[in-house]
Amino acid sequence: MDSSDRFLKFLGGKNIFYFLVFLILIGITIFIYTKVSFIFNPIQIILGTLAPPIILAFIAYYLLNPIVDLLERLKIKRIWGIILLILSISGVLTGIILLSAPAIESQVKSLVENFPSYLNQLGDSTKTWIQNSFLGPYYDEGYKWFMDRFSELPEIIGGFISSGFKGIQNIASTITNTVVTIITFPFVLFFLLKDGEKFKHFILKLFPPAFRKDIRSILSNMDTQVGSYIQGQIIVASVIGILLFIGYLIIGLDYAFTLAIVAAVTSVVPYLGPTIAIIPAAIIAIVDSPFMLLKLAIVWVAVQFLEGNFVSPNIMGKTMQIHPLTIILVLLIAGNLFGIIGVVLGIPGYAIVKVIVSYVFEKFKLRYNRYFGDERGRYELDE
Image (cartoon, rainbow, N blue to C red; front, side, top):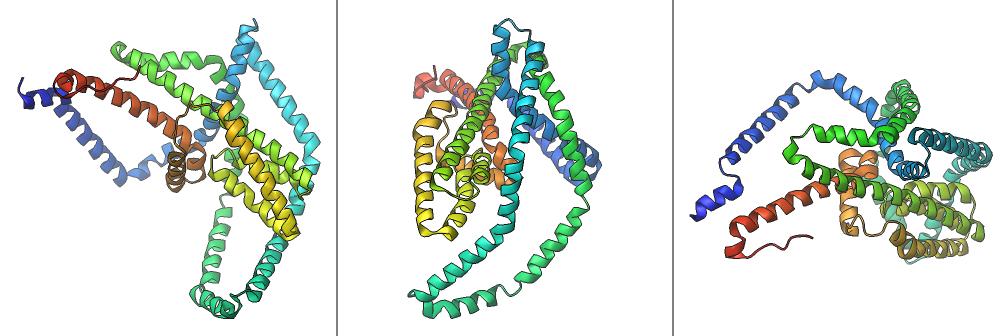
């Protein structure tokens, strides 16, 4: 077989030209959309309204579906298991909120009121340290340089404040979206838990029979990757919050409960979350005393050691198989593209893309082995 003919067949033969035409049509469609995007504003509003409850429901689905499956194996009808589980969780959360709300409210209120003074004390301590150190002679020059460079900072801040006041006009819309999310989220979750398998079968039937086996494999891998990540990361974040709360109580750090909750919430984002969570605790510890900062560092190192060597390996396992550097890069890129939503959903999104790319690459290796493997060496295929 001629090498050029073989290469053309490797690319798909004449079908490659249809594929290129398809890509051109997609490009034209995107170009037209950028010119008349205002027409699709109602669709964007609808999607923006539906996305939060659906995302929350999917996260809760991956957390609760294993429990529902367990109840079903215990001869409890699925629908009754779902109702029982949702009512139980609602009752437990309501009890926790009622019992802990006064303490949380008191700590949060005190922290909000006192945090500016903590920052001022930290600034004064830093200024005093600099003036008494070898940097003292340069302090005035450095301060003058800073003020010259940032003399327009008040105007910039004023612009941001002005924009903020304009944004208050949209507060009614924000409240409405929040209420809609809270109300619709349980219903979406209920039907996901009840009809999740039916939904998968419906998706499969949309594809031609020849592709359903591959699509089923892709969906199964996506389900495993995303589900294990969401379940594991929330459990790990909860364990970190509990360990830090215990540690903060032992060393006597102020606002232990509030700071532990902040750490648990931010730890949902791997690597970057714990770094963000330590900042308010460190500021409070520095203002308290250098010895408190040392104790905080010991607690933090101990918790990170336990999390990195015992908690995450046993809970997360090696299902994700993503290098830490890749996770950091994904978080940075997703954060710049989509903001806080990108940071939270960046890793699950990457896991989905990774499953699809891995599948396509496996097909590429099979095709290469078919046309070039015997002559130029074969790819090793995954078992």
